[in-house]
Amino acid sequence: MAFTELLESARTWAAANLPVAVGAFVAVAVLLFLGLNAAFRRRGPLDPEKLATANANAVTGERALNWEPAGQSYADRRGAVRREGQPVRVLLASTTFRNGACDGYVIDRSTGGLKIASQSALAPGSTLQVRAVDAPDTVGFVTLIVRSCRKTDDHYELGCEFEKTPPWNVLLLFG
Image (spheres, rainbow, N blue to C red):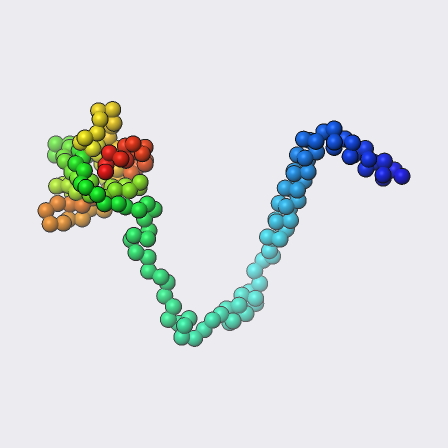
């Protein structure tokens, strides 16, 4: 009889305090899940005999001997897709330039950086300030880090990464 009375009093209390009862139930369920998950993830120390057996059972033969990891091209390593478009004239500023500034053109762009055609070369790792020539006066320079510099026919192509990704309205100014 005591158990049924206890059960009945718990039911009336839960009905009177529904939010507290639901919160307590959810908390117990979460703690139970986390405890069971941690218990199943625990593993003992590695047994060298089991490792040797696993290595002996590994796939052998011609297929295993001729396996090579898939080559990863430069395009696959990019975090953002580059897109080409009409060249956009930009003003470049760096301490390595003779006059402190020079002109260039954005050849392609992404949310991660810009490829700029310039008459001047810059060493990879150096910083560069860039601003679209047609940008309003309220828009300042954007800082870039030069990642690559390649000589083409009559200019240098600078592969640059944004030090901090600028807002979308500033990105649109580069094409």
